[in-house]
Image (cartoon, rainbow, N blue to C red; front, top):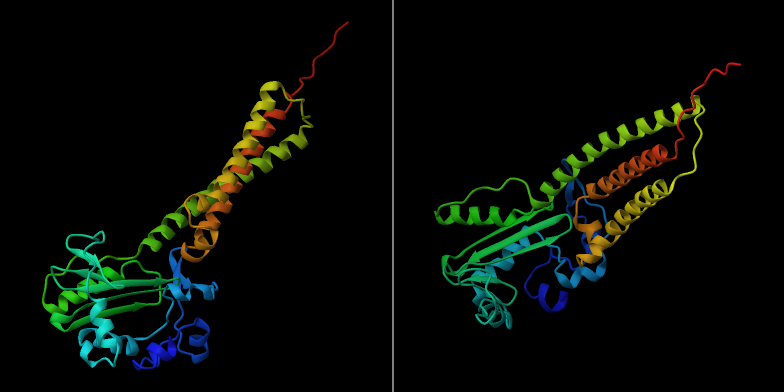
Length: 295
């Protein structure tokens, strides 16, 4: 790739591997949403992801690359032919919308002649849009997992051509998820703390009053078993949920806001404390009242 594509096209700032970008000292810090704010993305990304498009570049090289797509005749042999062929839509494939088709790695709109494609890796997102007939190209590179790069590029493109712009989206899908997770965390912190305080006071009260535990009845055994089974089922469903949806936990760790794990912990704690309170209530023997004995 380096000798066959990048060097012949003069893309000297483009790196195939994250380690190369880090050594060059030019890698921007990626970010992702975490508890109502953006925090650095520090997870290690497997080298095996590179073939899926984890190529790192900058505006200097992307500008060179886009200029070749606007004017393929300026590209050295054999890229001229390859670039032109890459813009030809496959009309036999399912469209992404009205008169929108997939070409060689590109989304092509037959009505406007606009060619575009988004790209995203954990902590970074970009979107490229160009129109050879208008000799115009726009690219947005972000060092955050924002889902609205498409919206931003479309509006910049419209402004450049003097067209009507659409609504400007604020935030991103991952940030919305983080807001939901963070709000639920606060809710479950309050709930978990309340349950824990009640549990502690119940245990202290039992010790002070010397209340003994009774042998549970059949109904009590069923209730305790149901409580334990409910906790186990919630745990299993949580562990299996990513697998059921076909994404795996490694995808959850890389792509979703880390607040999801904090939320899971507090949900489990709330269920655990509530279950312990139920079990204490079932096992607690009734308080024996002192009675006077007369002869």
